[in-house]
Amino acid sequence: MVRVADARRPAQLLDAIVGYIVKHGVAELSLRPLAKAVGSSPRVLLYYFGSKEELVSKAIARLRERQRTGLGTMRASRYDQPSDACRAIWKRMSAPESEALFRLFLETCSLGLRNPKKYAQFLHSTVEDWLEFIAEPLLRQGHQEKEARAFATIILAGFRGFLLDLCVTRDRERVDRAVDLWLRSLDTISLKTENAHVN
Image (cartoon, rainbow, N blue to C red):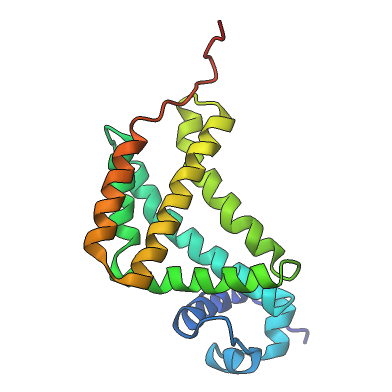
């Protein structure tokens, strides 16, 4: 009797892999202990995910999906100013329970910058996925794509810079104050809309 692969197995493995790399990191990741921890084998992991680098990229992508799901519920709320929405997001992203995820992002980013060919998928998606996510509501409001993506770049770079500072220094009072000043400045940025007329 021929065994039929369980279509759910890759997703189940990926969820288990996410839990493992959040706890252990990726810099010294080895397939053998990983496979043992998730109840699989190195051969099966390579069959499903292609390579260790692709496995890491897909695990990080799954983490981003979870983050976006949580942030998406916040984004659906009504905020008077962009800074109000970003302030709510900052509170969530800078919470102690979120630190392990950001540290994992930094670790993977460092590996990617040293091995850009192996981690090409990660390096592309770790910027592009978030730009699309942040810019999407601005595009729905009629803002030009170029303007929306530029504004999204400000948001993404700001969050990542402040999170890095917070992880390194633990100076929450100073960083929170800086974030507040930055967020207030966002409300002064005027974006062009698609139907804007040039005189």
